[in-house]
Amino acid sequence: MTTTPAVPALAVGPIDPAVHLALLERDDAGCPPVRSVDRTGGAPLRCCLTRALPGDRIALVGYAPLRRWAARTGAEPGPYDEVGPVFVHADPCPGAGASWPAGFHLGARVLRAYDRRGHILRGVPVTPDTAEAAAAELLADPEVAVVHVRALEFGCFQHEVRRA
Image (cartoon, rainbow, N blue to C red; front, side, top):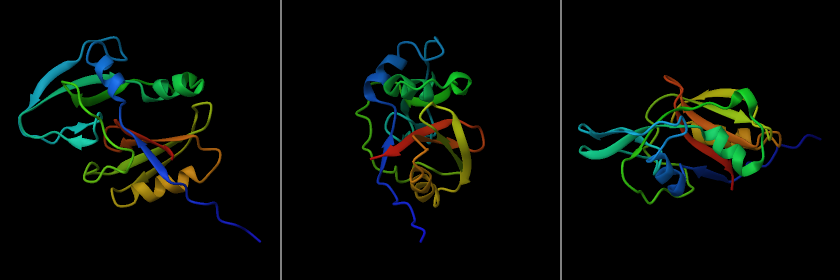
């Protein structure tokens, strides 16, 4: 008899508010943030998992999500550690809850599943309609420790997903 693994409840992780404030001083690449005003709106803000409104003050920063996760968990991602550009509010932000961000994902995504060491196990292309269920399916595998949601087009980090 085969059994299907239980689908876990998900916890979505935006950039932590304390990390967000630190990135506004010096980012994970060691650079100051690039501040601007989003004149048309729509920049994906990783601090609160919403889209910027026209006129919002935003900042582009280098962010190392796997490095941050590894520091919390003791993982050693080695060459899988990377820094990439993300938009955040240019001022403090209350952050976001742990549920899937409605309306945040507008295009194709890739889910990257990492093991407890911080090494990539696999990548799964998804649409906004299939991403949440695919993340839950990946996390049903006990070998998967964390999933990163990334934009398929440019590879930019969107947010982290883990078991609730």
